[in-house]
Picture 1: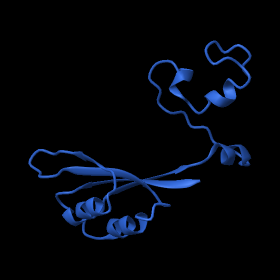
Picture 2: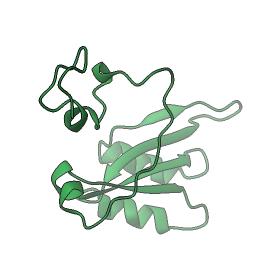
Picture 3: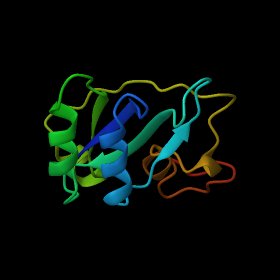
Picture 4: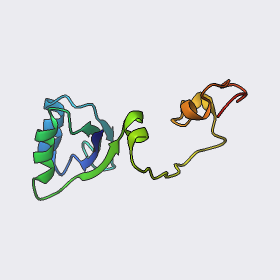
Length: 121
């Protein structure tokens, strides 16, 4: 299990935050905003990353808090070993195709042919 954080902030209002992202060499994306020098800075970081403690401190600093969206990523073994599992559909454009490397592919097509589905469970 790994806890991830998706962080987003307007770097023009929190330049110190942005400078720390650069100093820590965190891979990030910049979305420019009209009339701003830098724009919106976004990145994903797991809590197991040694840089997380610094980022966590920066998130708590006032006056402007960044967006912090958390999610948990479980390994296939953890999901199978769970007492129960809640299935939540995700958005899919078009028909679900096995070549898109979807998570359900391994169990659905176990023992069968991926191309035609013959022998699938």
